[in-house]
Structures are given as structure tokens and as C-alpha cells.
Amino acid sequence: MPQRIRVGVIFGGRSGEHEVSLVSATSIIQALDSEKYDVVPIGITREGRWLSSPDMVRLMKERSGLDGRGEQYLLPEPGRHGLMSVNDSTSAVKQLDVVFPIVHGTYGEDGTLQGLLELAGIPYVGAGVLGSAVGMDKIVQKQLFREARLPIVKYVWFLSEEFHARPSPVVARITRALRYPVFTKPANTGSSVGITKAHTKSELMQGLELAASFDRKVIVEQGVRNVREIECSVLGNNDPQASLPGEIVPSNEFYDYDAKYVDGKSTAVIPARLPRKIVTAIRSTAVRAFKVLDLAGMARVDFFLVRNSNRIYLNEVNTLPGFTPISMYPKLWEASGVGYHELLDRLIALAIERHKEKSALRTSFDPKSAWYK
Image 1 (cartoon, one colour):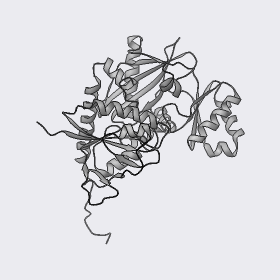
Image 2: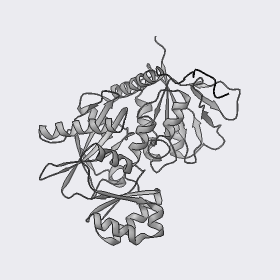
Image 3: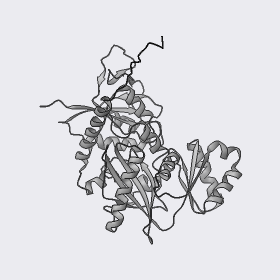
Image 4: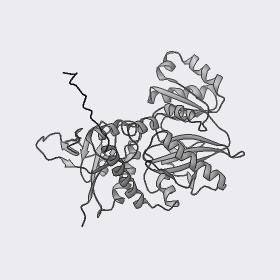
């Protein structure tokens, strides 16, 4: 039999999406074909400790049995390709052929973890450092979309420090540029953490306080009335493809954290009931957004669709979307003919393909003279 590919699945992390990451990791680890892959679970605790054992997902969910366990760390050396024990420097490095990082949110989805994997020289699933960073930052993301003439809603952004020091000018700037309702968001969170919808000045102030408690930057977006929430999955590297779009029918006024994960009342219509022309426009816009942010592997692209006019607004791109079998990213691909197991295979193959492409590039230069000595 051919040698199995050793896949390190990294999950948990220091973010508000810690629990979401554990659920995604559970699904991925259980679904990876044991005849093809040797899975190495790698958990990052809320405090940032790296731990690895076959039952690490369960231990982190139960928040028990973690104390006293020897920490592991990923060596930032391209010749090592694996984990080493902190307490035993003589132990052998646990080699990894590829990494599937499923750490949603900060310190995982924002380019920081991807940077470590680049230093370690290990292939990894998903966007690179740049794509992850701009995909996480809703403000920079929108600036790039605007430059590319992609359809986005009006927005205002500011530093949290500005708001805490002088809230009145910040609120005045928002109300001059936008009209109620508006959405207040931390610039760098996912899963709708810290997001609120404001219909009045009082609600706006509460939303700004909450958003500013999660990030040093806050974005306020124009709310669009009478919209449908449409999502589209993208898969690929240099030649990405888009899935059929699906529609989210949220249980709350908007698709907040509770509507996504807690109450279980939101529903998904897959594929979305849309005219063929709109489906084509959404899929092509999703691929354009993927390329504009220089993404790789996967992304879920979210849209607003105005009911009466069928006008499309690009909301945001998620570079590490939820990955349970009932998450929108895999469900949209399932409806498009790519099942969950095949999707994992293709993502791992794309990670290895991209790594080979980058490894073929020159990283050194020999000057004609030793001017630096």
C-alpha cells in the first residue's frame, strides 16, 4: 500500500471562535480516510498552549485533562517539518506532510498561523499569509473590493482608541455618512462575534462599545433593507471554481452568533432559488473576490441580494469557513457534486500543489561582489 499522508489538524486557539473550531476539527478528523491519511490532532488552548494527542479534541471540549500534559511546538525550520516536545528536546520530531489549520478567527485565520507554517516549510490548506490577513480584516478587504469595482455597501471605519477618546465626533461621522439601520462590527472577528444591528443612536452606541472591546478597529456598514443572505463556496488555487449558491434564512433579525450556532432555528436553502442570470453573476463575483484577495484553497463568499431589484452586494469573504458536514461551505459543494470526503482530498491536494509551486521559486541571490563583508 502507498504510504499514508500525515496530516496535522490544528484547532482551538485564542479567539472568540474557539468552540466553532473544535466542532469543525471533530468533523474533519472523523472524515479523513484512515487508509489515505495518518491524522495528528494538534490543539491550541485558550491560553495558547500547543498540545497533541489522539483524543485532544475531546479533552479540549471537556476542558479537562490538559494540565500537566507536555506541550508541543512547531519548529520554524524548513528542514524539520514537524512537532517537538517542549519538555524533551531529545525526542524525535513528529513529521507532518501537510497541515489542515482550522483555527477560526484571530491568531489562526489572520495570517499569523500561516506565517509560522511558511517558516516551517510545511504545506497547509487554505489561503497564504497575505490572503488570510486581508480576508480577516473587513476594512482592508472592502478597500480592495472597492478598488476592484466590486459591489459593496457604504461603510465608515475608525480606531477604537478614537471612539473611546472622543465618541461624539465618531458618531457624528457615522450618522452623516450612513442612515439607520447600520451594522457595527469589529474589523477582525468571524462567526458574527461582536456584531450588532443598530436602529437608533442608543443602539449604535451600545454596538460601538461592544465592537471596540473586541478589536482596535471598528467598521460600521450601511444596512440594506429587504435582502436575502446568499453564500457561495470557492475551491482552487490559480483557477478557482465556484459552487452553486445557497440562501441562509436566519432565525433572528440577522445571522448573528446565536442564529448560526445556538438556537438551531436558522435554515438553509441549497441551492438557492434564483434566476439563472443571478446565479451566474454571484458565482463570477465570488471567483473575482477570491482572486482580488489572492486566496488559495478555499473560501466562502457572502452576499446580500435585494429582493425587489435583485441587486447584488458583496458582503465579505471567509477564508476558513465552518467545516462541519452541516456547514454551508461543504454543503454548497455537496449540492454542486463534490462530497465531504472528496472535498477534503481536494483541499489537501491543493495545499501540496501550491507548496510545490512556491518551492520551485528562487529564494536566494548571489551578488557579483561580497559588498556586505
